[in-house]
Length: 73
Image 1 (tube, rainbow, N blue to C red):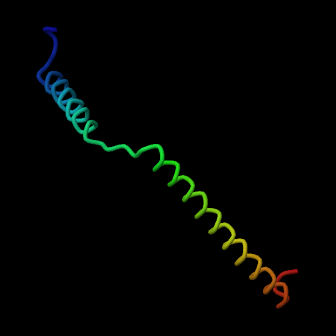
Image 2: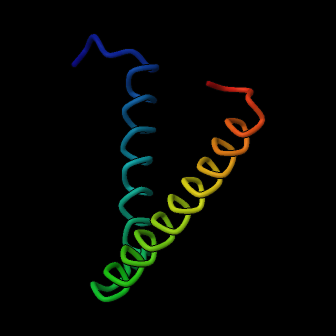
């Protein structure tokens, strides 16, 4: 260890301090419960389905409109 420079020692100390602070902050996290995750996942699926149907409806309307105007074959 006689070959270590001051930069190497400072870097190691900084990394140790960083990971200690990460560990400290990790303990402050409040994780959602299982029921919250299930409820929010279902909500995301429903919202995605509604937007998908909406985009399909708008696409169908514009497709029919453009065909009626003769803009697309």
